[in-house]
Image (tube, rainbow, N blue to C red; front, side, top):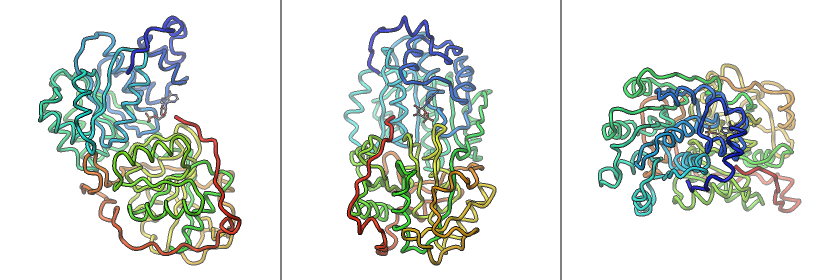
Length: 479
Ligand code: AMP
């Protein structure tokens, strides 16, 4: 957080952060809230900020996309400012580097008018830069467990002054096998401290962790810990070779702004991104075999609109906060309802509407049944084929509609989401990018990121192909 001085603090004091004024946050924070354009507190913020500011432990049942980050960043910064002394006093532990980077970014954004310093540490990159940053005595560290423990063991990070601990996306930490590391970290912390624990779901292991860590917590449960109500779910039955043509049809739809396309394996993600690129789409892969630098560049390119299609394995579903993703397309059906919930959480964020398409073959019946059970009702089927021709094979449509444009669903509305669940484990631990870490419970890990079978050639029925390449333009907003 660079100190941009007290410029404008008078104005901030008078407007006092608009609807955020009721929290009585420090004026530097209200100024940053205004600069960030946050007008109304989100429900998790309205409910979570007051007890956190009183120093109480908080258990927040909320997933990324609800505004939970500011719900802990603001009270933490306020606490640091009220009784300022230089020491590492706030520790946030997150399951992935992407989430750690986002949380650190929120500290920087909301702390931009303060002299407080935050730094981020995670594995998969050399430690030297992180060690240098730690020597600058940050007030806040946002860390993934593996690298944090390494640096603690090397004596590069001292946790004895931690006053606030945030465990973010605790359910993902469990899924990714991090709970033993988290418990090791807990032993390095002072006993007297405030604890804020966030999780989208409450598996029994998380409940146990919460019981161990939290003292009389304020429990904040949001209705929208479930898949966003703003998401329309659609199943598109298709034989395997028809998938790419359907995908291209979706990407050419009028309602398309940007999409995350999920494949089951890294290999398929890489291949599909290449094929889409060759077909004229601005597509990039994001998968666990890529180096940290490649992943950062891919994400940045997707966020700034250089690419409008990101083909990803489930690693991309971990806590990514990308504004205005209009479509999540499951090119391969997720193997558990949890993975489905998590993937589609990449759209319909921040109260925007989103579309979740799942391409299903006849072999996916069981997964589809499980997903529908989780959602609580059947998902509407829409038949699509190469440019309007009805698909053959696959699961029969629940209603007619061959060749109907999927965008017509939005008005007519397939059921909106319900149910929530724990996302499944995936490949990208902070420092072990490709190895799936199995945990108890339903798993996506076994089938994940295998280079399982060669993709069969996609049909060439796309009318756009005949019409030459088309580079799409769009107006997706930046964060
Ligand atoms: P999070 O769930 O913390 O990842 O937040 C999701 C998105 O909502 C982020 O882009 C935040 O910058 C944004 N956000 C958080 N709080 C607010 C708010 N009160 N008003 C508008 N946007 C917000």
